[in-house]
Length: 83
Image (cartoon, rainbow, N blue to C red):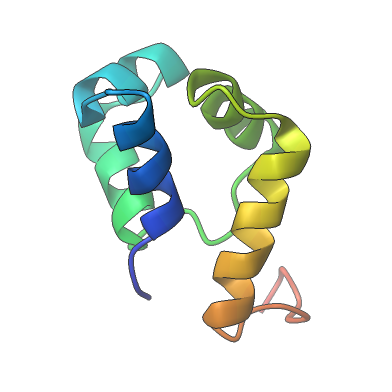
């Protein structure tokens, strides 16, 4: 999977480092870095999405629109969560 460029852009817009986002969202640096790089988090939990949206100063609706667009680019929209 390719990078979640929207996460990096939002992080930069807020002048946050990966450390800042991971700490404020309550996850390890490594875990957040893997999510932003697209290597983890294909199915982000609602709680994780909320924490990231809140940390990045956007609404949960905006976050899910970004994530939907990202998954659509990856050809993952419409796939079963259990595949």
